[in-house]
Image (tube, rainbow, N blue to C red; front, side, top):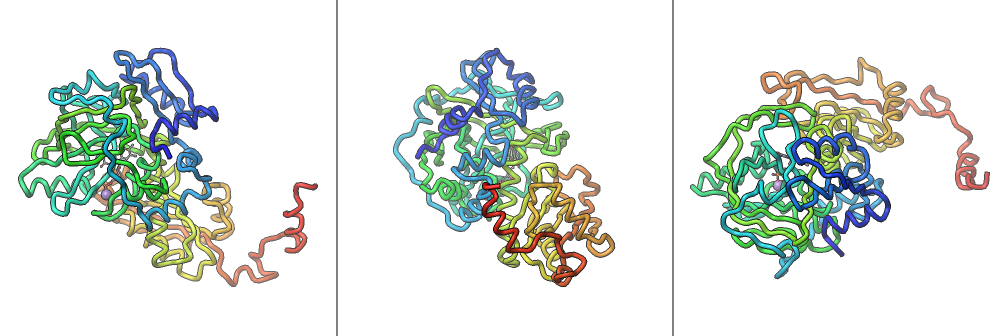
Length: 452
Ligand SMILES: Cc1cc2nc3c(=O)[nH]c(=O)nc-3n(C[C@H](O)[C@H](O)[C@H](O)COP(=O)(O)O)c2cc1C
Ligand SMILES: [Mn+2]
């Protein structure tokens, strides 16, 4: 099976989900503006990017359906498949050659001259590579880590990475610093959906995200060895940057857009240097529109939902589904569905989820007869099953994530809402019994509905 972005793009083209932009487009603001105004539409393939002969593609995975389809699944199967992949990884396989090394440039590389990296927003201080999957190895254990961090192109072979201190990549950088050396990295751009989703999974340090990608592909992810660093990258990626991050050389990043759609100022980022660029001869540059945009939010949201659901189920087997919502930017809000919830379990699920994912600020718990993706159904549950004085928990002064838009003194107030039925509420003839036709009639009509 093909493990490339371009195989996905061919599928999208076949079903009319790939739009070709023929008009020349400036990578400075204009390209990002098109992606932004078409963020809910088909993937956008920019054939002519001004100043470059390399095309750019964006908005590839901007719905749950597309993420599922990219993995060969129905949307309804997505969370189950991700949870299964977390439990049964498949080791990647190193192969001797791959298309990502069709062209190799070593020595003096000039990133701005070679790659059509978009400049996204007015106040950001340079162009950002946003779909770069960064692989690195733990200097202590030698174990791999694979995750995305945006890289700002600083000119020549230099990049700036703003990595959250709690992310594994930051920890690897601290470990390299303790040993007095730089951290080798390789940045794969233009990846199969399985690699992108795997890169977003909250797994423990030492859990190789390539194994998750393999499990999502149902076969080993094929890797090639890099030319100038001791790392392996997906053989069928479009482009790879090889280089190092310097744990000691930092630079104030200035304002950077985050998933709430606002600018944040994180302080100093880490400088990196690129020692080689390898690529397909006809490489396509993938760009993920950053900020409050469906693709950025969903990649994280799908992965966080799956990892949280898996973690909760270890303690509460009746957790059916954890949806990290789109309005909550795929990070801050969750809807949890419970099968046949017993008393107190709603609040338990809330505290467990917030404990598991520090970003979560609003958690709503509903029964599993509610489709969490349908806000109207969730709202109906709030209207018919939630008593505010009993079912809302407010936790002031909880630790805030660095991305929290309402953070004050590194704290924020969190809210949990239980909107589930109590078992005794639904006794036949009781006040909360659902009104419907007798069971046997309803089921017969359901089976024969097409004949009416
Ligand atoms: C489009 C996109 C951009 C991202 N940019 C950053 C970033 O600039 N810095 C960062 O720390 N995390 C960023 N992330 C989130 C991390 O990739 C994600 O939290 C990952 O699970 C971290 O993995 P790790 O703990 O193994 O390093 C981004 C995610 C996406 C989808
Ligand atoms: Mn990791």
